Image (cartoon, helix red, strand yellow):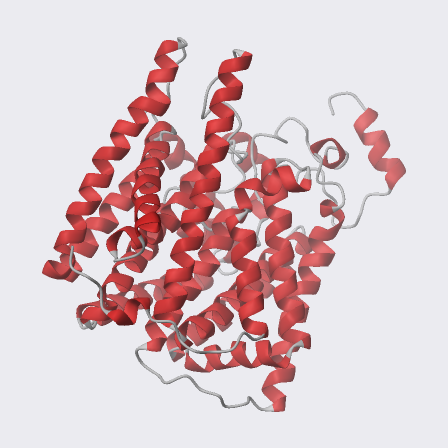
Length: 506
């Protein structure tokens, strides 16, 4: 394999500052996300949500109190193309307006706040990456290798424990996620970055780890029936191959070899144990199309009834008819979700921003320098794969996917900006600094006030005090108890909540 340009492995001589510490902390939490439930003694979904909120709220506070981090945010914002700035501002404004008309405005504002804080994290990461793109991408890819290694340990422990106990094997056993599809979403975001060390002249240890874990990642996607992930990855590889042409041809053959090895590992690690212990393995041919079409139709009916502002962010989880008929708390399609909950205007802005961004990314990729082509290639796999997967899954909904999405989008934005502007040391004006601090603190306050009461009782038995237990564990959304049925606009007094749980049918 051709040795990479020295620029890919170069290390910029920069001192560690507050932005580096914040970025490294966010990355460390993301790496440990599969272990978050065990570390926080919570259900998988809720433990991961708490970890994500800790990162986002920490980011918001850091922007408000640390001038260097605030300056980093404002530099990245100023460097954004105007189309993206207008689209983001419009989406947030429409989200706030939609929240004001929602049945549960507090929960609606939580979703708006998470969006603002996630974008804040992405912009800070983008500014950091733009100042040392090659080294930052190498660090991110190695972090992904470590994270997938943790997932491998969880898989091994789960399989061994299930065999010893005579219970159902993976993925029916403990996976670190409340729903195996949440693991598949993580795979979509990270697969390209996981491959990067294998495609460069990294040290032998990192290269072998990258190759082996990339095959393992494919094996888990097959073993869990992750068709959305597999199809999104396949489509993104084909599109990237056409986009980059001969530049990445050798790397495409490496991907084919890894995929073949992944099939073999699936047979050895997932399929064979299921056969030996007379259990049914996951199958890729399970019917799914009709259920998705039903859910999309139900969500679009809500859009037709409220086309301008939608029913409100997160409000499908409070729609009794939607929950009863669809048996889900979100429509498993990012565009349909924005249409139904945020309204047509917000959906138009989102589609415009994403479409324009991918188009500009593609144009830039075709003109990319040789020493940057590989980094652009793996980021293309992540961005395009996630965009496609979001059309059939809750990629924009679940906590680990949101956290990794913020990091990967930030890295991609920083990578893009690094080729188009020199790092700026300009200090933003005091007025802009105050505005940024106020907006981020407002977003954090919305999250704390809206999600704080639930965060204090994330155990589903406590949440059942104010929610419909018949759908409690079937529909994760913000929390594992995704249904918002039974949640009043104002907090339910403790005595009334206790009486509700004691009544028949609760």
